[in-house]
Amino acid sequence: MAIEIIQPDGLDTPETYSHVVIATGSRMVFVAGQMSDDPHGDLIHSGDLAAQAQQVFANLGRALAAAGARPDQVTKITIYVVGHRREYLPVIERARVGLFGEHKPTDVLLGVETLAAPGYLIEVDAIAVV
Image 1 (tube, one colour):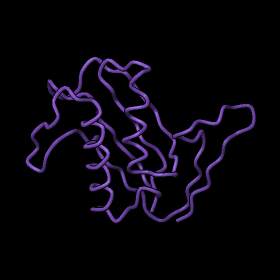
Image 2 (cartoon, helix red, strand yellow):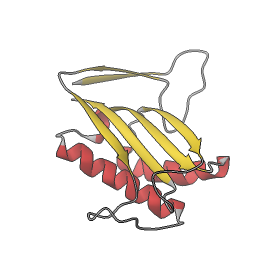
Image 3 (spheres, helix red, strand yellow):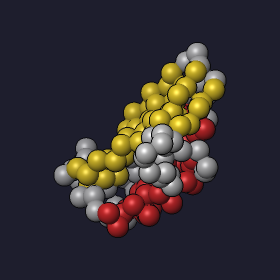
């Protein structure tokens, strides 16, 4: 699998994501939205965005590994954040870099009113090409 990251002329150069990713591979992996759940499906870190973000990206890493995919094969993620405010970005980006390191998949970040159940603050899904 090969990934080519492009930062088009005339667009800014984001620190944690890319504007364009071109992927060539034989298999696509779609990972459902990961939340701050323990192995039993119970919410952990209620009310703590930083701790939830770390758990969400750790869960995403586990889901990718189960499919035989690596974080550097992810082409796109979608991040859903309850009541998103700009000051949440550094918190989310720290957790994101914890999984992806220097790899910068494309992304969408959406502020939402609520997630699947009370107490959840962040959810992230992903697409990888393997």
